[in-house]
Amino acid sequence: MMSLLFFSVIYGLVTLHDPKTENGGLFLAEYLTLKKDNNVEFSEQDKETFNSKLEKAKVKKGLYRRDETRTERTVSHDEITGMIVASRLLGTTHAKEIWDYLTSHFFIYDFNYSRPYPAFHPAWIYFWGEWMDSYWTKVFYPLAFTNIYLATKDGSQGQTSGKLLYFTLLKRDSFLWQFYKVRMKKLYGDEWVKSVFSIYFSKEEENHPLIYHSRRYKYD
Image: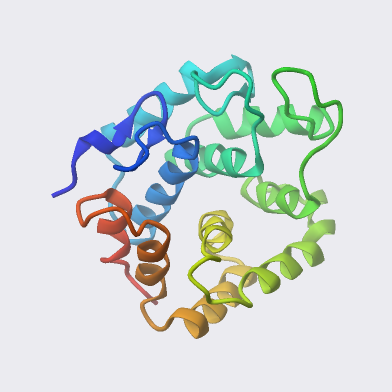
């Protein structure tokens, strides 16, 4: 039985060993991705957690902090990935607003206005653009392919963070998703989703939502 204590309207989806994690938005998107792949309906708790977190972290339309407590920390590609993917899965308007902000500000995403330059690798722009049905971002496809290839060369336990990011980033109807799955299965075996989540979240118990759903993953 999963516990609601992992769902925070401030941080997103937290972990037992880090209840104020700065990655709660990405963890929430990973959780929603697992549920989607497992054909499990999203709950009102899922929607409330996401909507409340973003409302509290909002600076202005399309611009958000990591969470409401982190007023100085910059926002990385992990958090933007979490926000865009979760929004698209839940059917909210946040993703479009974030994408509009990114494209209208030349991908400068800095609520403190202290970093007047784009800070994101073009590959991330491709992946976000896929979620937003943007055709011009396909120019970065070769970089995206290369990034996935490099990220899935190593099966060591210390190299799982990037692999989980691609698990969340990749559209399920894309060639890159098929390529990624083949690579991951080769590295971690038939139950590769369960393995990678168990490695990265090794301090969590069975009742954590990410562990619970990854151990029940529906493979093709």
